[in-house]
Image: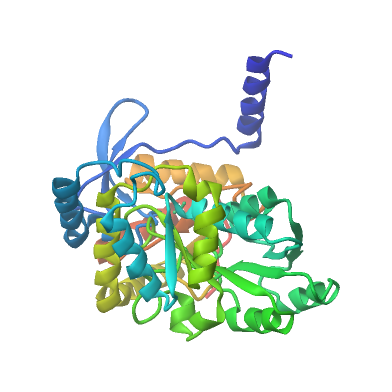
Length: 405
Ligand SMILES: *Cc1c(COP(=O)(O)O)cnc(C)c1O
């Protein structure tokens, strides 16, 4: 078999299906978020407004964060200098883990190089190293959770999305003595819906299972100190593990889990994905600490963010543009067709200087292709008006359905 031909054919298949991923090349401009420089394929550059960033609160541009990172580089240099085990555990990592444990009211925390790695490594370790573990996984869980569970080769059951009754039904079928773990998310990133945390924990308790909650899209965003949906709803003590990222609302990079001292020590001691990799640069840890500390005591960003989301929804409603109604900050504008979704995104960039990445299969099911819009407190009313007018114009050109008022 000719390997190169195989790879070319596989890529051709993606093109034919309209699923080939094209990355927009941008350069973020410090202090000017959500403006970025777009490097167009024809070699020209121009300013565009980013409407699909996961830097939900603009913390990646916040001077409190960038100043902390610069100071840490001046003090500690660039890299961590090793794995956590061999010379890489810097003072800043320890401070960050204390900050995170405090955020979620847990005994301990453990940081990883990304949220993806934290899910993959923590779920993989808990499921593989605890004999007989059965994992119950929400059917819409993130790829990083699925891969971690798959990698562990444990017994796994998929329960219907956000459905505690289906979870109960599945758990009742298994050996009551088997160790069990329920893995799910709070805010689901593509539909923006929120998991029924309390009801899922009730079922888990009934069968003596531990619980693992991914709060990646909620940390920094919800709760009086930015501890996520579980903090907002007073449920943090119901969760065995709360996992999060430092790369979305906190604006930096890295992932983490929080939990009991024993559980964290267990993952620290047995997880290959934690042990055999270089620790985060101290400057990232310092930036994350500054960001978390700031959002623990300032609700201003969260308040302005909610207002921005409401304005975007209202502006779209004004034109009858259908967007998924959900209780979170994510505004999925439903196109329902891969080619049209990509075309609208391309024209928004080319003619309206608006960057919204099209979301197509396999990230979302066929027929639910969408523009995933993420408003931030730094988008102006002018930005919102321009976005809604531009989508409205393209909606007509594509002859897409509207909501009737
Ligand atoms: C983005 C994401 C992750 C991974 O976090 P990173 O820090 O970006 O690696 C994990 N879980 C969910 C639900 C996500 O959307």
